[in-house]
Length: 285
Image 1 (cartoon, one colour):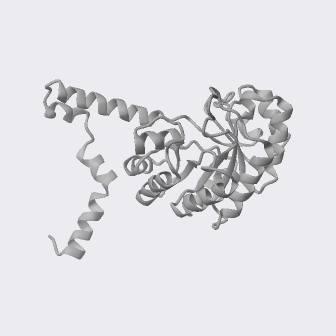
Image 2 (image 1 turned 180 degrees about the horizontal axis):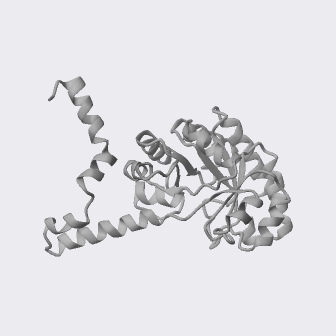
Image 3 (image 1 turned 90 degrees about the horizontal axis):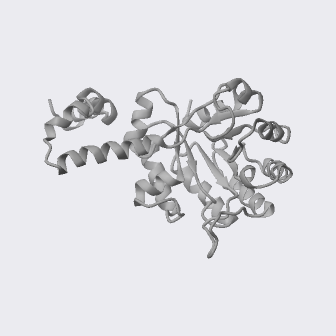
């Protein structure tokens, strides 16, 4: 089963998938080493890793695609990629799908948030339904591999009326996308109303209602639940603490107790395979 087929299996089955936030080849290898089969690369995390910058849409499509390629080349995790607004208009969204498919993404989201922020605007708005429908239709058209999952992401539940949410979800569902990602759903009745609007699989954020109640979620079409990106921030804190220890005059050997073991390093870096290739191709003992 390919990574894309694996992601689709969650959308089409009864089990709920919980992607692990990954951000580079090492984190992706760790996820697979631990048995995780779904991963997610958030736009904010990609911006942090590639640029050391906040999530202000300063990352370019090519930079995102390069990072996706590094991750999927290193591990066969089924990677969900946050493609933000598709990096422009509908034709840009089509190009975004093409590039992320070529980079090895298993799934991606295109959202209706008005990005980047307009001059003088302190809060994010939403683009019109018609513009979003055009982006989604173009994105689906840009797909070459039918197993690639394209998801419509909407933040309407956080700021718009229930009627507008239903209108947007219904319109997006008719574009050929494979599912709907919902941001801002906080009550059960919101999710139930959306479920009555579409039969497509739903993806929910960690702030959604009763994410621990799998029976309720499954009954309402939820097939993937996100859990945030704390893995990246935990890694950032671990690096900070280790570097501070050294900067403050601590010994490197004192870090051995909390460092990755040789066994874990070998598993993540694929050391045994490289040793075999050295013997086979470089004539080394």
